[in-house]
Length: 137
Image 1: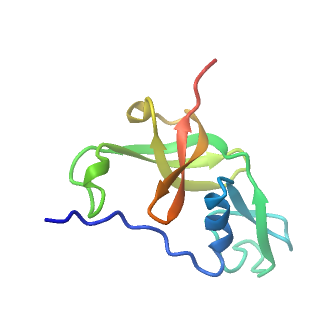
Image 2: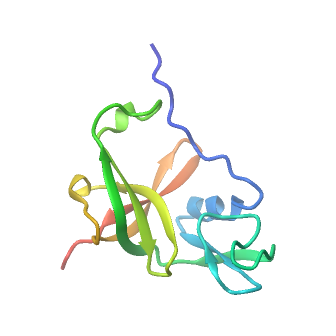
C-alpha cells in the first residue's frame, strides 16, 4: 500500500518569485512599488493600494511566533510520516505574518513569543521555507 505524498506548492505567476528565491535558499517578501508596503503571502494586487506593481524584497527571515499548535495525531493525507509536527503563524521582523512549520530541536515545545529564524527544507522538486527556534547564547 502506497502512502500518499505530501502536497507541494503550485507556483502561480505572482508567487513564482517567492518559490524561486526559496530554491536559492533566500527568503523574500512581496513589496508594493507603489505604496512601499509589504505583503505576505504573494498576491496579484497590493491589498493596501490595489497596485499591480509588485516585486520582491529580501528578508532576514527572523521573527517571533504569534500563534502555534502541534499536530500529534490524525494528520491530513500525506503528513502521517511527519507526526508530530508544529504549525505556527510567524510575525516577521518586517511586520508581515505567514504560516509555516517549526522544525528541529525543541520544536514540539515552541510557544507564543519564541524567536525563530527561517531555514529551508527540500520536498520533492520544491524547497519550503520552515522555521527553527533561535537558541539563546
